[in-house]
Image (cartoon, rainbow over all chains, first blue to last red; front, side, top):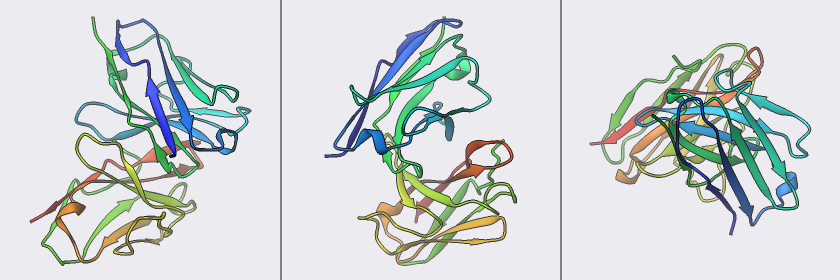
Length: 115
Length: 110
């Protein structure tokens, strides 16, 4: 079964850090462009970042550039987002999404930023 | 404000055909492939249409996509109650070098 499973969400303080993960199964991980998309409570979808199949190129939304860093580990078939300098507006469900047309979605992990 | 503009709501009765729009510009919809997604409450979005008008396996042919200039459309024929949900369009913007999503259209089956 094709699956992307996010983990690591939780509560963080403004200015703090959090690292969320995405584990892939049922796919040839090295062939997939992986993306992160978030959804604030009651709001629409917002693209956050993408990383190329081999990890050689990364793209970030202006809202997170310089604060978030995406990486991937092919041996572990996992993707990571290191989130630093967190802000209240980063509060959202974060989805790990596989493919260059966003065809495989994880179930999401909730990140809350609050004091 | 989203780079791609979608009407906030749409509705129809069972069996009807409904369409929803996604308006962009020459740097996104006008020159790039686009996709459509549906999200039901509490669930992750699901890909409906990709590369302009291709349906992934399992998506019924009642769903179809089209483009005219800088606007994309999603049509649903033979509307069913299970089609209710939030529909999002998305594409790459070559000027901004970012992926962009529309604000979403909430479809209600009356």
